[in-house]
Length: 320
Image 1 (cartoon, rainbow, N blue to C red):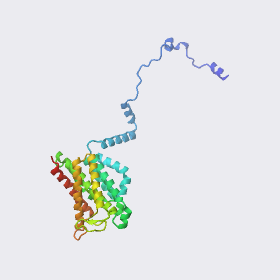
Image 2 (cartoon, rainbow, N blue to C red):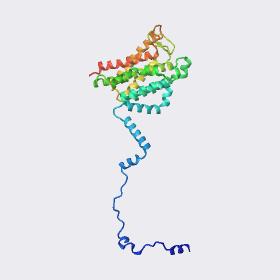
Image 3 (cartoon, rainbow, N blue to C red):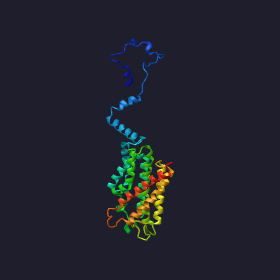
Image 4 (tube, rainbow, N blue to C red):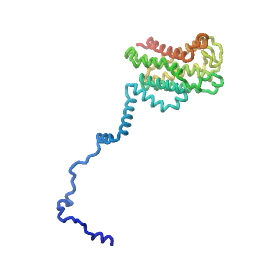
């Protein structure tokens, strides 16, 4: 009933029968578009995004950040941004091996390293840190019981960071400012790698020696002394330190910082420097008149000797 009533309702303004021509409604004359349909182009999408300031600003920042990180020639901006990102991601590892002030010092070191040597140099320093921290944590409870463990459960402070990286920082600055021109660039890379090979070898030999050394000798007299004595060495620690320097030099070679012959030079220079460091520790450290000669100062001397020796050996044996 409702349907029949609806069909009989007349429209108040009926459409005249002749309003449309047969040509207009003939099925053989389909509707023809007078213009080609268009779809959003890249430019139109950008205009649409421009109406969303927050989205555009975030997209621009992220795009610029990725461009900086992936830049072929490191800049201070790319170094700072890359270092910040890595430090945020790796903060759990950093906290386990460094104090808060030590983390700040390491951040400055990482930024300088990235600016001078790019990602490969940064990875070398990161490898040094991970290996050195792992060695420091070995048998920590035993070392603490014997009174030979590093302070703060092995968490290094800014003094240790600076003492471990001073020579490397000098090489980084020399590289950044192009000291000596292109001919000396490889030497600064070599000195940089050699300094960290020297320090890692020293750290590992000391920590493994304190953990596993059966007999510890004073390097100047070969007298048997307790573990942890300044200037003391052990067969176990010496071997571990040698292997550590070989490992880090190999990493530097794989990363392209040095070549294979230079990696051998780094290992030799690091061992010579570490013997010298042990002699300084046994003969002078903690002696009257040499109270200023603490571990951080000895570290600076040690890594500087290793770095300089490597550069000199390269000039003598590999200059051709």
